[in-house]
Length: 168
Image 1 (tube, rainbow, N blue to C red):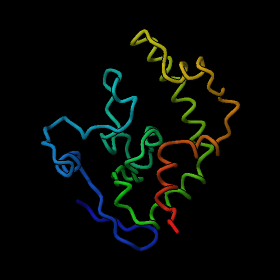
Image 2 (spheres, helix red, strand yellow):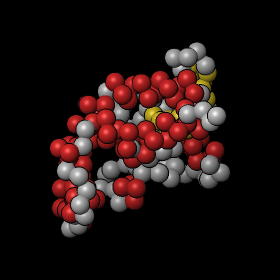
Image 3 (cartoon, rainbow, N blue to C red):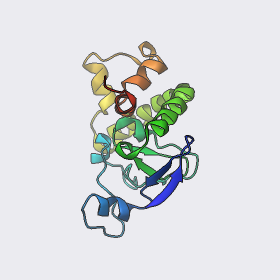
Image 4 (spheres, helix red, strand yellow):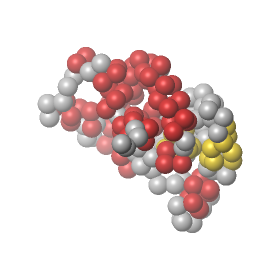
């Protein structure tokens, strides 16, 4: 485990490698394997695609947009994963502020990702992507959802909000 300091001055313990993630989860680690991914779309990866839990795969200062599709991990700017349950309230608050500040860009990038994902799923698996199925089932069109509404509806943001809310 590595120690990192959040903006509140607290030291956070983070898990630096897939081996440490799996060992913490009580699973055996084998080279080339990753911790089980909490991202639903990772159940059917494209050829050559790595799961979300291949932490840091995109490099420094690149956010894997699948982070919004799950509620267990935050991955910092260096690609280091942090279990949300282990993060301080101050660090969780910093993550919320960061996401709010950059929500328009993350929203636009997510729309592009979902469009590409839908096309790729159609071509690779001859099946419509989840976003297309949601639209056919009566889900809102992209132009009907504001970036703020999208962000607040993601599993990650819902978990972050619950984690910083103090029960009376």
